[in-house]
Length: 74
Image (cartoon, rainbow, N blue to C red; front, side):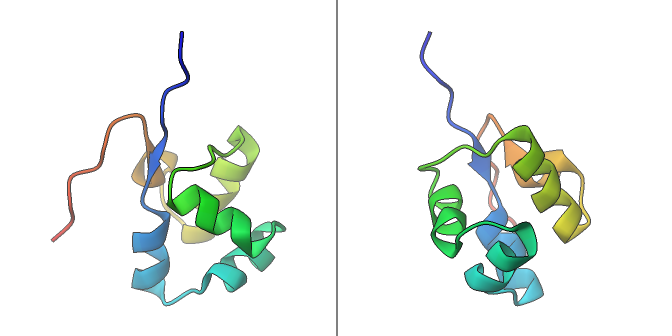
């Protein structure tokens, strides 16, 4: 069984709240490149990291991450 891709809206949430990758990374305690890897779908976060990201943006986990592609907002 191959690993499923985890889709996310991290870049959209960052842009909406005017938060840089570096600022988000510092708040989460990760390297800023990790945020880039996550946004591009090159890295799937641990459950703990995913929960921290959702908490940072104050949204439900399902608003940030999905196993299916998100429909474009707007």
